[in-house]
Amino acid sequence: MNRLNYFNPYDSKSGAHEDQLTRAYLVLLKHSSHAFFAFVEYCRSKHTPKGDEKPVSINNYLAQGWEIETQKGNPEINTEYLLSVLITDNELATEDSGIQSSERNARYDGIITFGSNLTMVIENKPRLENVWFGQLKPSRQNLADETKIYSSPVVLEWKEIIKQLNHLSMLPTISGSEKLLIGDFLELIDFKFPFLNPYDSLHQCKGNAELVERRIYNLLKSIALDESKINYHRGWGYYIQTPYREIQQIGLIYDHEESCFELSLYFGDSQRQATAFYKTDPNCSHLNSPEWACFPNFHVSFMSSNLVWFKSENNEHYLQFWKDNVDDICQQKRDDIPNYLKRLVDEKVILMPKEAEEQLKEKFYDTAMQSLNICPGFGVIYFMKSDEAEKLDQVGKLKFLLAEKIKDGLKVAGLDEKELLKKF
Image 1 (tube, rainbow, N blue to C red):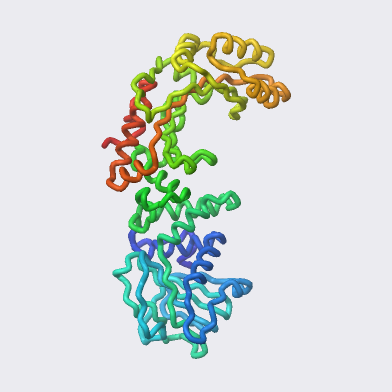
Image 2 (image 1 turned 45 degrees about the horizontal axis):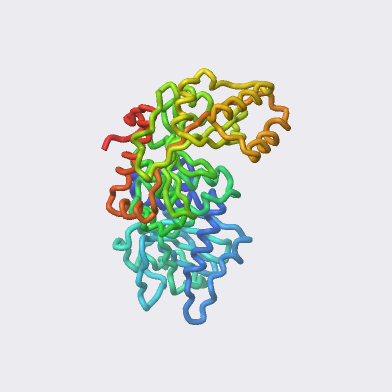
């Protein structure tokens, strides 16, 4: 059975063996057209022909199709051209003599064949110090005399491949199966080959939003008791799924425009969560530093869709009202909505500007909806400037600060962080 069959992994090699990395990447190229074409374009951009050599024109060969193989010993190669490809963790100084065939007994990590036009032989060395130039020279055995060997190898860096894959995973047009495969491959890198990551600290991300998001993902995994609870919400960011009734998600959000991070805790975001939240007698008086923002987050929803948000002027009054009226946090029928909201306005719990009235009319009164869920949420956000976060991450202290601030945020509802966070 082919070693690139998804269900036929190596049994005798550890997950951190470089052959497992090679196989995983070639499986990804086999099943993800986006990843494959990104790889092909990367190879083309990094190739420098010498003398009278024609530039490698891989795009012109795609019409004939291609075949991907791994761990092939001295295979028969009779294409018009052969290109040697090295994937490693840094740039490599090549020999002046260039690439030519040798008498060595070769076993290629990967082979990609484009019809009768081009063969790529791939050598994967995650660490540059393990590379010797002779490995880039193809074996003369079973190599057709007519095959022209490009004298310059293509040297690819894992960090650039990972950046490409991270970018692809964010594309809205990519299929669900491809997104899942790319995510699984990046997770393999995180766990088995973390030294290849270009985003193992925020300063290395250099403000690139996609790489920062990936670093956020790894930061949350480093503090979450259950790493499988880290998820992504499109339009918001990465968050930890909590075990609490009072709050479902805790997000670490990167605001690119403001160049800051927001550790966001939204309590009572649904009707059921709100009921549980106000029964805890919430108190945010301990969050009195300027980095913390506490605010009412009242909104109405239909089923699982939030419809309209309303502002409030006084945190303490808002919290006290709902603590005193927990039983009123319940679904309201259509005919009861006007009086219910009027009461909240009269008692200065929420504001009802013209904009909110128009949204309510458009999203509820002008529809066939017969009820609304009442969600008197409450938001708590810790703000941190990007440069401060980068400095802390460089010295390994950022994850400890995040855990500490999550603990402070959960204290608003008297929740024990031991159910959510690792013990440091």
